[in-house]
Amino acid sequence: MVNITHTEVVIGNIEYANPVMTASGTFGYGEEFQDFLSLNELGAIVVKGISYKPRCGNPPPRIVETACGMLNAIGLENVGVERFISEKMPFLQKSGAKTIVNILGDSVDEYCAIVEQLNNVDGIAAIELNISCPNVKKGGVAFGTDEIMATEVTKSVKSACKVPLIVKLSPNVTDIARMAITVQEAGADAVSLINTLIGMAIDIEKRQPKLANTFGGLSGPAIKPVALRMVWQVSQAVDIPVIGIGGISTWQDAIEFILAGATAIQVGTANFVNPNAAEKIQRGIRQYLVENGIASVTDIIGAAQPQAEL
Image (tube, rainbow, N blue to C red; front, side, top):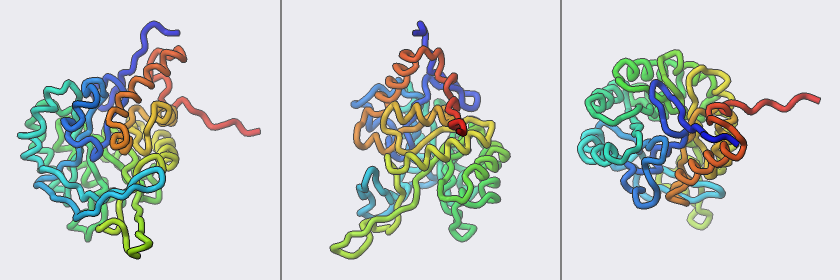
């Protein structure tokens, strides 16, 4: 058994106390969870996606429980960048937790305009770029499903950004490893994956979709095997850190993602089930390292190996 166990990880040029983060859209702006866990014990808080102007989101119903997960069609509701800076950042700056700001936009110019405002704010460790958003100037095609658009938005935001840039990848592509390579070449300091899978649910009595938006993003334990596979593939394809997301509910889940190649992980849907899930996962990772005589969490990043052929 080791005397000292290190849980610190480095992403970009920023050191995080441990690899456990909260996933955007599942943890509000941090303040909503302060009564349930010690925010400063998290590696980072990733706030819900911030747009240039406030968004009211989609009409209800916009959340549906599914087998081992949930569908959401919130529609990226948020307060907008100006109110985020004035109303939300003061609390985050005092919380003791590192803050990663997830941003979204309908055009490259809009993404860059958000970053330019955030550049003047203290206490932001990194920007997470949500490229699952539709590019309104390109007919609504998502930035994250087209290599040319993904390259353009990543390059533009990276050039405008004063902190490390994490690009959040969509799983709704043919080859997610190829997309990861694309954004790495465009300047991304790290990638996070996966965003939600597109799904739907139907009310058999009303004979209509349960979501007002018809389709929604599937998250929770049901998507974990898909997310784990994609993290494995991407971590072997790129040289930048990978942040694993998708159905992580326990510390055992988190260890799987780290063994698959994730430098850090994000806890999402589990926050709705257990508001202190992220803190429990962080403590579980540390205990696992101690009990297995592992000096640093970095020693097990990507340590899983394929089974030998018979």
